[in-house]
View (cartoon, rainbow, N blue to C red):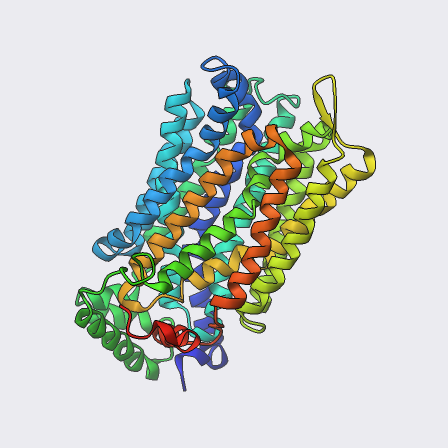
Length: 489
């Protein structure tokens, strides 16, 4: 009986594996929280931090930079996470991520200038980038293949819950300050500062869990701790399968050592084609503009005349994002990754196109952008349909695929590169939205719609189905799908 049938043998093992996956995925909560907590603080930061430092056209650029700069730290964190995890082990690197995020939350909340706010957000970004790579890697190493997709989707569920909690906490703090984020609350600190400081709570939780979860069996075997690996496996697989599970990993490690000189380099613009698949999936996930909704929604709804309800609308969008992630968890191991991605591409392109049309009817009244009532309704509905399509497909499934498409000999490094590409793409979208929206919101949304359409074509032509395929066999799957790649390194 295979390890993949664990859920049919004893619920104990399923509960244990699910618990470990949830603990690791809390790093995704930190990512979601850190990404969206700035939503409620953007305008206040513009008034109290950015405006005193710069003015004129540069103000939009600098405000976008403060929002997005954390993502550069995340890209660096993702880049170094794989190497650190192979040297220190998975839980220790998770703990490092928690410490960095803890320090950043306090520092950002007490920042006085653009430069120190940016620096603290970069430090937090390092922690988030580390967590974003370690979580799917750890889950992939402890989860049975038959439920791997669902458990890996917990990473995205945690991200969406983090987004929702950040938006909700922004709403509560803003309400407590009389709907003025610059107003002071406790300790004479502005509400927007507390929006950052409350991040110490999830950082402490993540650090505690990192100290409690066991090391990955693969890492333990990699460093010669076979007895410890047996002890971990005894809690997640039936006793008579422990030796077989260890043997499989030892064979994979031996194969990795034989391929120790394997690199990411290949014939496709300097990289292995499979690495490019991961990079392009990551870039498409961000270039559809999803994080514009979660970083700038308060500013956007205010700009179109819905300012009185901006924070509440953002909270509703966050709740929708959480709810639809359960759809992905339920379907990813039934319908498969590829079909859901194709459905998601269509489901994103249409509402993004409607957003472009809606904003083409926007008018200026006393310098304030406004939408006719009918088109304002269309805009709100389209934004949430877009969130539903993304949250049920591209949001979680790209993380699932990044944890399973790369061959074991390059998995850690390739996953780091793909995750770094995702953060950089996120930075580009986040940084360019303020100046692009000031130029033309219709064209901005048209650009995002085009990328959604292109993502459909890419998946259709280049991404095979990985549902139910063991991690050790994914490379053969890609080679079968693309025989022209055989013979590459």
